[in-house]
Amino acid sequence: MALAAATAKRTTMELGGHAPVIVFDDADLTRTVELLTMAKTRNAGQVCVAPTRFYVQEGIYDRFVSAFAGRLAKVNVGDGLLGSSQMGPMANPRRPAAMERFIGDAVTRGGRILTGGEAHGTTGFFWKPTVLADVPLDATIMSEEPFGPVAVVAPFSTLEEAIEHANRLPYGLAAYAFTESAKRAMLIGDAIEAGMVGINVVVMAAADAPFGGVKESGHGSEDGPEGLREFLVTKTIHQA
Image (cartoon, rainbow, N blue to C red; front, side, top):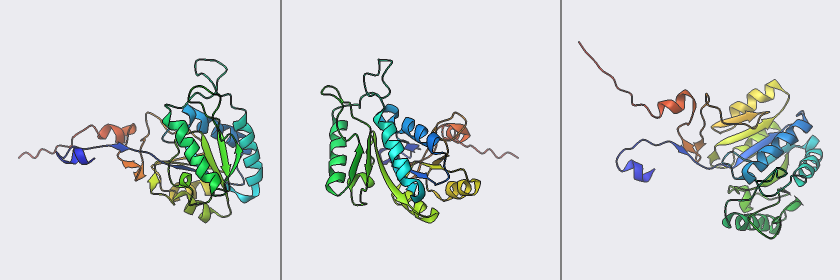
């Protein structure tokens, strides 16, 4: 942005995030767990819109955590060229090292590993899908995007509390919510500070819809009419 500003070049910035997920007590638990497993393990969690901070309503917290950790534990990690593999390696040796740092810091501060938490195998950059619980707010992973197959799960009580958690960070790329209530869906979609909100879905990209963030997650849009306008120059001609 600074380099572009030197010559007044326009920019579109699609930057990182730390996507919150809010799971209400009326959500379809089986479907929600399956969708979030797919989203969390896509490209080994190395996706800008990957769900990371999971806030689950108290009434279903224990059931969700058990089901989600159990489902992630069954994900087959391996060579992406093998048909049996469901999640491949991380991009480079820096990523497993980052996972060790994030998880180690969280555990030191009182977090619990429910599944994963370590490398998969002895070769390559493979990492087991990981679920952390009871992680305090001062843990690094609560404020920095891990960009890996790690999910942090915490309970919440009220809608207002969930929104406060979701909007706590300066990032605002993507956010997710799961509920069968149309009223909750409308309220949460409006209240969450993110460029994209998925309600009962985890797919964010579509050719006809703008893709981009707010706050420290960037500005401008890709895709959709808004994305097309980023490449156009408005010109006004007055003629008498």
